[in-house]
Length: 341
Image (cartoon, rainbow, N blue to C red; front, side, top):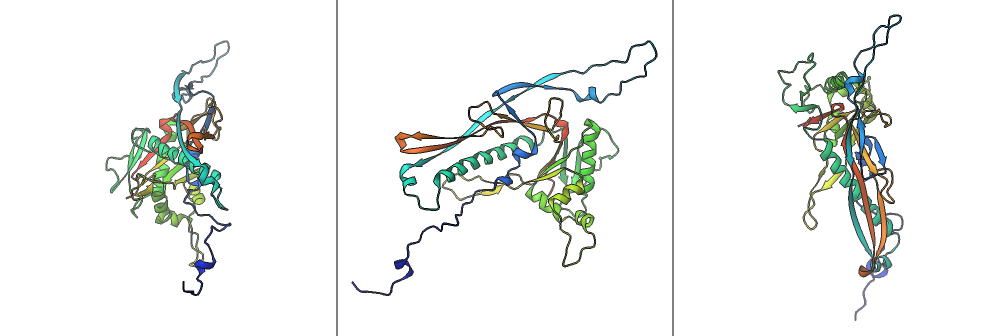
């Protein structure tokens, strides 16, 4: 056998570096489903909760009381609605032979736990979008259009919906649109929307909109340009927070070419979220998390289990999410449909 000059492959066997591991796992901060509406930990899988008609609280009925007469009186009604938590689950079987053969820096138990957890977060994000960001859910809707509806009357108290010029059009007025929609919800409910949830496409469009950049620009120089951030955009709209749905989903089945896309496309949701949940505290929506499910945590009813599958010579890592998304104030939300082209 002839001898030859040794190559790098002859003197070195490639091994994973101990200080880096690359995996396409989406950052948890990209998922907005746990953050838009308050979370309510519940002990039972399903139960009733009280609802109160808002009109009774907003009626001016107090009257002057004359000496020796009774005070004016009134009442409010109460009704009930029901939540029903569903359990979603996914598992990964970690085979003994695979674990025994792992090299540093791999920690397959940790990786499979993160893999299963992100499957749950992804499912929850898709379910949140399907539940809340669609027509027919909210009392108020605003649809993007080439031209503003000629029949729209900004002074009308009965016009629930508004067709707005696509915010991707330079002639559009997103600041005035948001202000109008906030005012309409406030007029009908007594509560001002304070949270704006947007798709990445809509958010990026707003960052470059001339009206918004012009409001933020305070004489910046070419070397120090005006930069629109999520915080100053929220301040401009007078909102507590702007959330951007950055999570993506692969809709292709395993074995086929990947087909990635954003979970939210060109839509948005303007809604009211209270500082904290309570019995007499309205909110556009609530998430009921089943904590009474053995081992489930308070945020989303998350439960991660590891148990032996001896016939497979594997340990099963299984994740379960138990929750229910409820619209608890349909008049406290505005669906922004196709708001950009």
